[in-house]
Length: 304
Image (cartoon, rainbow, N blue to C red):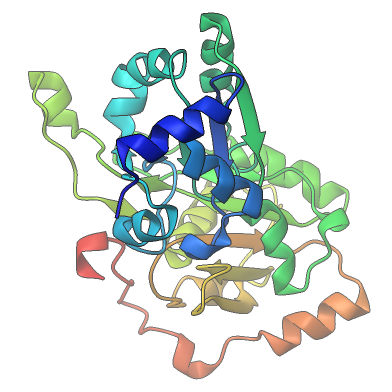
């Protein structure tokens, strides 16, 4: 179903300059791309899908069927080591770099754009929805959010807590905090790094339950009362997809909430407007949403 060389030649004849298109795909499925984005992709000779900062909600072949173009997955190794090849292609032909959500919202691809400009590439951004605005679907008003923070998986030797200070600053102003949860796709293991081998950890995503447990651990260590077990929070999962889930509860309760597969984000609630209170009540977690105290939902993609 991919375009013939003849048709590609006709499209090239209509183009005045070659272009690198940085295209946001939105949050749901292949149909969430904008009309401008779809038209740009159909003009391109090469199409790459960035696949290490987020997870696409549908298989790659569904994108290919709609776009009529072959899509090459750009994993972390490609983006870190092979991106120059793509940028050199963009000097000779139209190239699309697809990003789940919006390329310049929750995850920045500014370095890619700077490198492309430095090589002389023409770059066009085509924006789309991201978790940064879709989180408003939980009923909390966007203008009442403060700084967003990232929460990474703790390890035995690395338990960063710099996010705590940003949450503290937001809380002092009564603002909500959007927590962007870790995703690890094609990440080399520590042993592999030490031995110089190309071996990777199983892909996994952070659940809201794990995030809540890590936040509780850091509050216990810091002890500044920025938040606590009774602090209200909201889990949002698979926003923009048909099976999106929104659940509100206390932070302690969130430690045992199961909202299903990826991707998850979470909000620590600040001061609220009565309308926000009504929305939080509407999304209040039910007894059936909680797991037993000794059980944590799987975060490995292979288990889903």
